[in-house]
Length: 325
Ligand code: NAD
Image 1 (cartoon, rainbow, N blue to C red):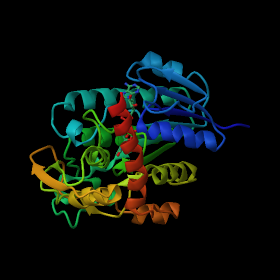
Image 2 (image 1 turned 90 degrees about the horizontal axis):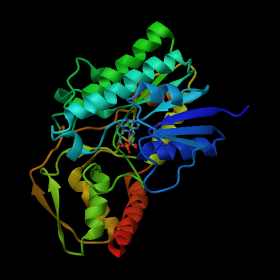
Image 3 (image 1 turned 30 degrees about the vertical axis):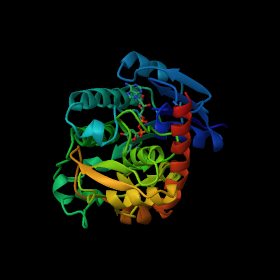
């Protein structure tokens, strides 16, 4: 029989790609989100526009059986949205309500398996002060000290889902994503993340121009291309006995200066950087892939430049289309 999936957050970047992947694997898919995907038609069989903070919407969305549920809906964005402090109440309230509703009504509706997208932002700030040696192994999450309220909500929701697993037998799978990027993601407007922001700035710049960067650019991060993220999600969902939490991220750590340099090289432009004050987050962060390799017998291994090439091409197109409009 055809397998069925529900994707919450199906209008977002990762959710819309996930719907396509599930469709390609032969699932019947219902998507739900406040909005349809911005850059493409959804491949979902059914798309419900609805607010998952509302229990009535959740109950409607869960009015049939699903083999798999993916909960990716969240009030979220890049550093310019998450680290300014201006959106913290909304982030905790909105995403908190979505997850509280989903865990409770999902259990009541008898869903068989649920995936929850947590984040590398849950890791303690005190382990990420040295840009060359950040510690992000899964067990290092406690004693907890995330550097943002976004991270606290994610950690709370991890605990929420695992509590429902413990007390009500909900089959929960949790991954902590590390900076996922790719085509068809937010690339302007204030919620975009570093890879998209630099692709946009460099696509808009002329050869020899200067672009702005928040901070000294020596802070480190790793970035994972969307296709490998989806592969990791599916492997975790298909794992018989491992529930996570697990890192899904790349171990190719770069400074933000290096990130901008790789993109400039792809664009074949000579670009200078002007460092300015701005919201930053921790000094260093990298995925630790020991556990995923051990438990799922797999880890991401594609070079960062490969994903950036595809992403740059897509954003360059968006920039050109924007100019024409
Ligand atoms: P996104 O913002 O593109 O997608 C989230 C979607 O949730 C949006 O389409 C939004 O409209 C929807 N949503 C928000 N509030 C809603 C509500 N009340 N009801 C219904 N839908 C609602 O973000 P994304 O990059 O696709 O991230 C997906 C998930 O992965 C999120 O939970 C995010 O926190 C997590 N995550 C992403 C990254 C990353 O690098 N992209 C890293 C760590 C964790």
